[in-house]
Image (cartoon, rainbow, N blue to C red):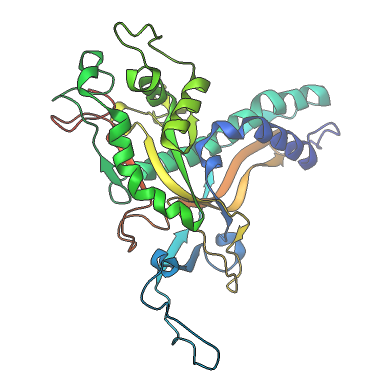
Length: 357
């Protein structure tokens, strides 16, 4: 069988993919990260990229500053302190989505299938995979420090009967005070949280001013909460609301928020992000050195690849992408305080969390 003349082309696939991305990328957490271009195994070199990152204290005033006047030798050179950063780009692919090559099917029907089914399904899978990897690193105690909320024993911020014993604003601000001075070095303070976490916080009287006798509503619309939270804590806020199926292939679906797959993995993260942009690590001569709490390194942008098998009379599609999500300055990077932290998701006895259970 020959390929039908009305078959979808690479131009069609790329056009629909770009349209879907523009309309939906903001719903995924990885899109909020600084992005750097990197190499993977398709480069013919290596999927490991390394670079030296200057220590933050290099930019802080120390004893090397001295008085100087013309005719006097300037102060001696000082060796900059550096730490080595290494990232590994992983090529990720979905399983194939197969469509039969029926000679009577119109191009319009094929294009509609691409636009309404193929592109949304495959690209959402690739995006959700990136977000799943991001959620994992943001709640990893080997990378970032976990901090508690002040609650009564076995109570969480969702325990309405314990509100009088809680002050999440103070708990968060205690940790943010350690990060804010680094914004003077060009890093931007941001918060990333799941939609469910945002719902719990927006219902808390510390943020909405509600409670018995207050006359204020006990909840807030998400947009109003984001504005309030951002103003109180002085940070840009990203509330992530997308879904993932955590079940194995062939099992009954188990649908959950990607950033809230269980109470124990709910994300409420604060970090300093390098917003300079334009990072390109593909050349060994590159002077770029992405900094901050978390970075998305991209070798192949999430996309759709296809193959026509005339022997089987099918058109196959895959979602594919390549890159890494990594922390240049997680725990142990030689910084006075980490450039990011997360709040305990679930209460453990006297260690208060967002959720009681």
